[in-house]
Length: 348
Image: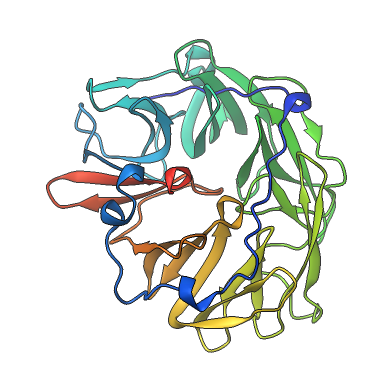
């Protein structure tokens, strides 16, 4: 249907991403009334965009990222199709730019786009497909402004999760057996050697790039009553220990706090050291995003975004997306034949 491009800078040039630490997580004055939330366009008007419900050719789509200058990275909404890459949509001009070259499409069939993300002045994407009759999972990159697409890596099959670390892309690759039989691989989005992230054997991606975790998402496991581990920053090498409060059966941790679901089904959160545990009044779960600044997840099956630095929050009517990494945007349909896009890193 359509295509796009992506690229990234050199791993040696990655810049540290500072952790924003705000003290105790759950100041009661910063916990919103989740039963009475205004829509995102009222809470964060500068971070919300209204787009046409269909592309100019009538195709359905969803948005993977906001690229700036009124451009959006878009993907076919169908879970499996012949589209091997995303596209760049510029609603103001009504243009959809397919950036993948014949190098991407040659011999490719049964393509399934797993993820796409803008990284600097490039776009990166993972695609599952068959190339010349053989199964393939490939990571591609191309410039947003146009130019040749570059294959960054051919990876092992698996869940297809990814994360962005500075100007590079990371993914999990099996190496051995068991929960620790994995290593994090990394490549600069502009191309270059594929390397292991130092010290990442037995680590897993989080939804807070560039952070990795020493226990798989949702840990601890039943045979690991001491829910402890650490987070590794793949850019700086910093390590942050975390402790799962025993009241929280399964925790997902960012560099400052952890979240999940309590045994009674209510959403629960606590500080990175296991203290400050609190259960919300709503069923569901919330997890750290954007370095822990945001809490995202589902409450009563409705998508929620909570900015814990300001206490402001909003509930979406419905979430549309197929991203397998940290979300860059939240997308939902709106009356009047439109799509609404909340750009998470534009929340202020």
